[in-house]
Image (tube, rainbow, N blue to C red; front, side, top):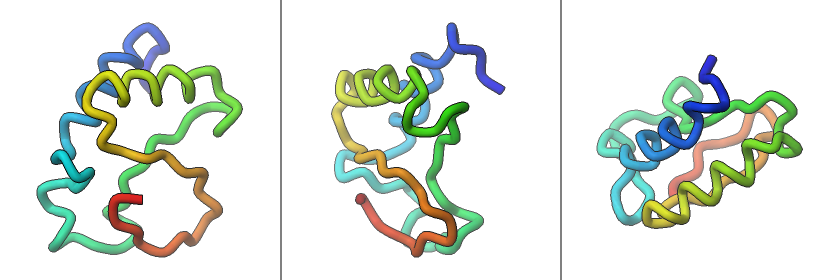
Length: 79
């Protein structure tokens, strides 16, 4: 569990894992549910951390799009 006070730093580290097109370095070889890029937040998309996550991502290159999962989602590259 990441404390809310550390969440912005976590997001900066997380988005740094992706290249300018939003791909992980291992994305072309590792596929399937066990390799999903995800951040689970208490309260889901209604969490106050969502806005903070998007803002930090935008401040660090805006490489990612965030989507609400539905469960059993197929692989998607650079949503």
